[in-house]
Length: 524
Ligand code: TNX
Image 1: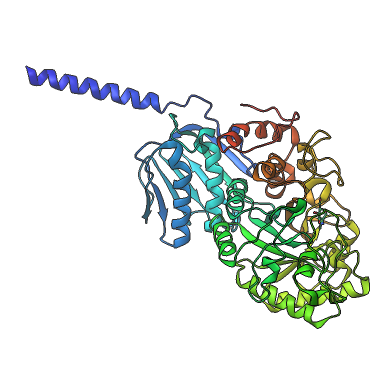
Image 2 (image 1 turned 180 degrees about the vertical axis):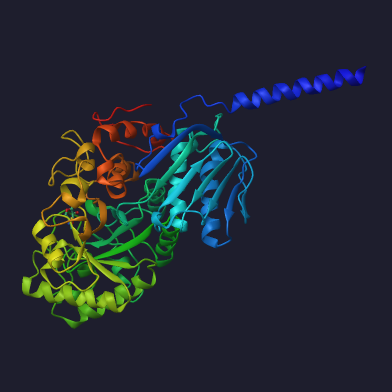
């Protein structure tokens, strides 16, 4: 009798538990994958109407045991653990795992997705990301993060049904280079700041971080063979603040952190102009052999290295030699912009010789568009920022361009006339203006075949802290990331702004100080 009662009680509890489980995993919002607000917009999305529910017992399975794969699995686990409160163990497997798990695999994806593409499939049973390379898995993970409710990005446990819509996403980038430049010279930003920047931009599939490491106002990287550059030349910044520099260990830590987010760091030492910090640190680099004073203003174009002195090239070889050994990526940026006090006949042979120095170190030189005044070495890249004429000169030499048109991609410009920080020299750049352009049809004579990608540039004359960095970056950067990732035929401002509006919740969950543009229908 008692036994019977206990059995029926047990059955009732089981039924209630089953119903509860069912309810707790019932989606409260739509389950149409094609209606998700993914940025950058994927190449193709098909929906099944099904949904997957992430539960406490889920694990992340990786197929293969390479360190990079393991790191990618751990990265995903670390993104999902705080808000879900689930353990989400990372395990290796040789076959498709059972129900309720996440599966990251380097087999199964069609070769057409390339090195950075992925296929994300969501069924009731399993989430699978397949790719050719770990970078593709990482990009698929960024998409997956955006399929969860925005609370997934909170740093503390949230009471939520972690369901996502079912279907398949096939995705790959339009351009291989999707970058952002951070100027750490005009104002210095700490290692922690740079890491947060990497966290935030990698979510939008940015894969290059260009660090502007030297300028008139400061030298920001330790060079052991020329120690005064950092110790003296790094002492201050715009406005006279304390400045700072990265030790080589700190810089290597940034590079490693970026690499673990599939972001390649591109270091820039600007020359022959924008060199006052170096000229103040070493007298012998000056034409007249006398050191200049440190500079804390915002003028550009008044400084130049002594292009006719041999010591200058010894200096460049030493600096780039040390920098190359800290650089895991292919590029070293040589600057070359606004050298207004360098004579053209001196500028051209200088830029040619500096390219050769970089190439000899096994790296590929990039320079601002002015470098196309001289002969560009095979493989060198010109970064278009202001002169279409220079950009066309580069194309005529068979050189590929990195597109950073100031009127679209200079995210140090104000949004509108009321923006407190930022410049206006390249115009006001509202969120639609940063989004609404196509790199391949922006300038006559420059087509997709001439372009490696795009880069947003954040100069820091007017910004002093991360809150300000975030304000100018968000929400323009997600739009620029989409310009670089999504085929132009799939892009449209009116549709994009709806998706962007839905990212406010994600910005808030990550405590991002974003500009709430009136052009965007924000959904809180
Ligand atoms: C132009 S862009 C510069 C920088 C300034 C920036 C301010 C470029 C290659 N040179 O030196 O910081 O404008 O917007």
